[in-house]
Image (cartoon, rainbow, N blue to C red; front, side, top):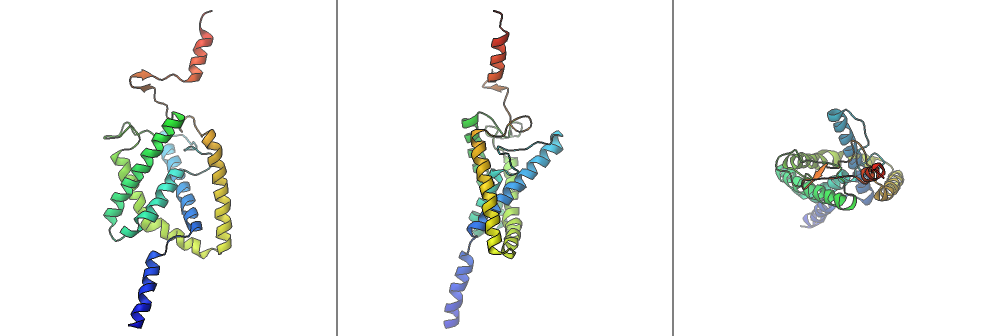
Length: 216
C-alpha cells in the first residue's frame, strides 16, 4: 500500500511535468526558423526567387513558432490518438493563420500569403489543403521535433541554455518591434491584389505619378 501511494504521486508528477520557460522559448524560435527555411525554400522552388519571407528581417516566422509551440503544449494530452492530434492541429493552425492574416490586412493592407487559387479557401487566407498540411506539421512537432529538441536542450548546461535563449529572444523582440512599424515587404514577400470587389487598387505612389503627369 505504501509503495503504491509513493508511486502514484510520481506518475502524476511525470504526466504533469511540462516544458520549462526556456525550453518553450527554444521551441518557439526553432519552429520559427524552420518555418522560415520552409517558406524560403518553397518560394525558391516554385518561383525561382530567393527572398526573405515573412514580416520580419531575421530568419524566423513567428506564425510557425506560435503554431508549433501551441500544438506541443495543447495537444500533448492526445498523443495516444494521432488522428485527433492531426485534426486538432489543423483546426488550431487554421485559426492562428486566419486571425494573423486578418490582422495583417487590417493594419498594413497587405497579404503575406494568398490561397485564392486553392479550392474552398476562405478570404484567400486559409484553405483545406493548407490546413491539412499544417495538421501534419503539428503531428511532426508533437511526436518528433519537440521530443528531439527537448533532449538536446536537456543535454546543454542549464546556464548556457538560458543565456542562448535570452540572447535570441532579445534579438527576436528587437526585430519584431522594428518590423511592427516597418514590416518586411516587396516582390515575392507581400501580395497586393490588383482588384478588390471589382475595383482596381492603385497604390499611393502610382497616384502621385499620375498627378505629376497631368497636363497643366
